[in-house]
Image (cartoon, rainbow, N blue to C red; front, side, top):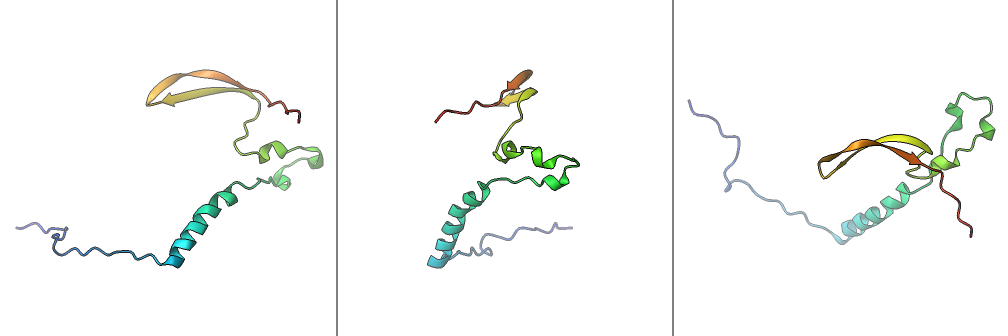
Length: 100
């Protein structure tokens, strides 16, 4: 019994070319440049989900900062170039405000 081939011979495959119109190029560039602007917007936190009596006196502005890490001690495990670095204690401190 002969096995069926799932691949077509090269002579049967036809390559399609994608034609870019000037309008499609402009749209792709506009969408590509505007995407980071939307991603960099401020983050807001809905305090209604907190089960607290004193919501108005809670300062959540520090969490509106991208990549913010709460001050404290954390056990960190690193991997650099596929090499495991032993777990270590890292302390994060609150950044001092600069005088302007």
